[in-house]
Image 1 (cartoon, rainbow, N blue to C red):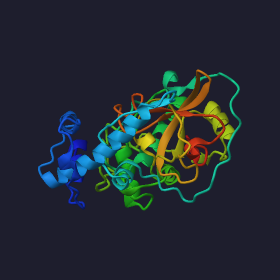
Image 2: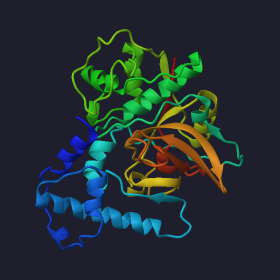
Image 3: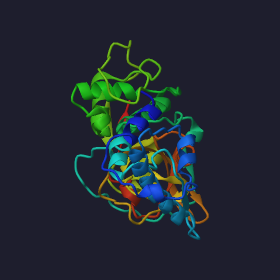
Length: 325
């Protein structure tokens, strides 16, 4: 089932209805948004309900973008008509064992840049679709980086193998969530296939371990000490690192470009897994570079630059880890 089919099912689910959207201006952009995103809602009551949510998110995006001297911009995307609860269920999925808080760091003074995308460590931006499998994409990204570091070959590993088979063996909940540490333990025990041999289908299904020999196993995984300075050191010495962040804010959900900074982003409640691939500096601001798994239409081609100023923004330093091959 592709993304648009799943989106259709979510949009047309019979949630409690509101009819206020009937009275909205027909030129508010709702019809254009549906056309651009290939969304058809056959029931007027459901269309009204979804339009109300979309309009609220549109207002929030426009209010943010109208501010002067902002660090980043937002835009409406295919998540625009989803409630916060639906967004969390279908787009996040990191289940962290505890709410341990990471230590903050010093504000960087060096203007050095590090970007593993330019060094060959990072595969293309992928898309988890409407499946809470971010943990799988974060895990494969860090293993892909370490495999490249060891062999000089960049391979694309199978998130579907993790989603299906780690779920079958009790290491995750598949599309209902998981944790990178448990996923790495699965790869240590059973290995992981190439993406081309076990392609992604946007939902969990029966495990099919018989896809030929696995592409690689790992020996272990290492948890980075939970503070920003240790995270920067590990990133520089090791390569791309799996991290967990809080992605619950609308500002994160609808991020478009610039250096992300939201004081309301929790540093303790972590619900999304991404891949940390570098850091940089622009116009007085230091930032982290994270690779998301929401396709190239989100953010800066699928990436986000997140402020790096010693505040441990969105809890990025709390749960960081990398595999050992």
